[in-house]
Length: 424
Ligand code: NAD
Image 1 (cartoon, rainbow, N blue to C red):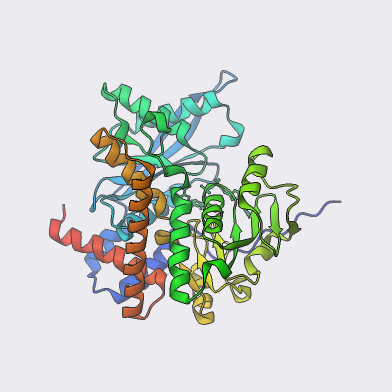
Image 2 (cartoon, protein in one colour):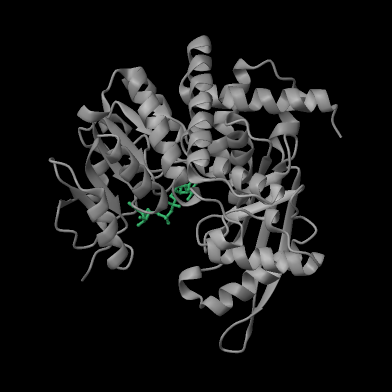
């Protein structure tokens, strides 16, 4: 008889609660009225649509799709479209609010939004995916718009789906409209540097934080959980800065080499082996969860949410955590990390490189012009460094963690803008 491993113990019951507990923490420090609290807490608009799709077997299946616009106070809504079996309206609500705070922290003129469809992309053909994203776009054609709400890829969607979305929207409006969506293929108005942008932002945040802590990159050791888009690019760019990446993990397990892992080799291996590191021989296979508690200088969770919890936070030895993933640390774990003096660069700052370059994509589309990679990387670096310094100074001023400081900046900015605009 085969026994199933017990599921990891999670700290929170839903992502909305987790986001709200951080929000509440920051609001305690800010002088925010109860009315303003209610305005910022509640999403501006929630749309639920039924999506009938003809499947390859000829039968019609109806999916449920969502788009939540949390806030357009700073600008048009911005946020990805998630295709995943676990998508719920509640999750989309939390992710939309996260986008509001993320855009505010990096000072880009977008509000927060998120979309999702409860479906399993791994079990769907390309044709089914195309029909699904096209019907989703049709149902959302009055929600989306370059000045209203700009979707992007998220889990389960990528440049291919964004190309279909742009095409369907353009047909509905009777004109080619590149700027309605970001994360498109390069030939369709995508931006140079977008693919690696989130990993680049993680690398920049890590290097600046290491400077503050007196850790020299060329003497540092790093562990990265998740070897997809964010984790692999963060690892590669940190390796380029002289850091030694000693551990990597993905869905197939964790891999450790005390002498350092060549990230180029690991990326090549993954690309030739169905997208995973299974069988990667340049490192020893270790228990997946133990990656998080290795004795390294920097830990980069870049896979999924709620992996650093009150159950393992006590055992973390890294001096610095840089959150590539959205929501990898639970609110209860935050307290423990704080007591242990471990610095965590929060997701809404550390992984904001992606939305920053998405903003550059939108700007280029609207100018009808393309920027070179150098300009994009320079501007992305400036945006993340400025945001980091602002968050750092705010944390010193209020004697709070970098996470609370990031929320203070974001909530204050949105609340102040709301006051100037006078509400609506
Ligand atoms: P991805 O699908 O490209 O990669 C995810 C990686 O995590 C894969 O290597 C997968 O094998 C691994 N993984 C899954 N479950 C795991 C587990 N239990 N243990 C270890 N590894 C596991 O996704 P991505 O785009 O790299 O996104 C990763 C995270 O970063 C998500 O939280 C996402 O919301 C966040 N994020 C992504 C972007 C972006 O631009 N891609 C931007 C901001 C935030």
